[in-house]
Image: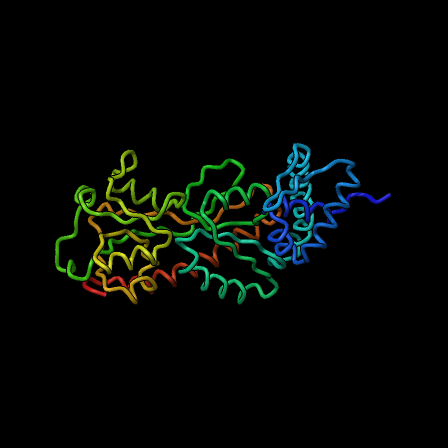
Length: 310
């Protein structure tokens, strides 16, 4: 009689995460028929259905939901056993699943990848971009090893390592370059362009403008900082972006950049990981390399952050 294997658990955990045979198969780097066969084999071993198969989507049965939670915990323990060996073998090496929030990834991730692969030749980086809530969920469930996010995340199971502080800057139309920089109170009266809900940077910008409880009706949203900056260039309104985004996002937009009056809005960027992760020591060393990459990026942003039009 066949027994449940780690492979069964990984395939089923992927299906439970993606809720789609095709996407789960792609994530496991196997064909969809092969994945379906493995799930049917697992159900045969269990002696009960784990999945409700519909025409367009799948649902887990009640047993499937419970099984997925147990499988996830087992796989996390298996991964941590493998990490124990890596933790006792010098510099970090092998697979490292690292998450990054969207308001950092396009600007910092290329340099981080370059610095990490140069310093740790044996590392196999697996970056993933997602909003903070999703990254924290994946960390806690063992699908990520570490993440670069805005602190604090205030999750007791996660260790936090601050890396650097970063200011927000004001992006406004080209013709506004010579005008006085508006205060946070004045910004509340302007058409403010912000990221859509789910992005922590949106909440930070709203907090600076004291709009957390009642955003204005004419507040406009975009899915990326690039979209917001281009909308400002078209004369639709103003927006706030993190300083590291300035060199990239203002190159092709007819906008002006201004630093806000003190106390300037800012955020603290850091790395987080599970406290139980055997690689915690290596991750702290790795965080120093990320900090160095961020400082280089900050130097470039400072050069781009000059008064006047872009």
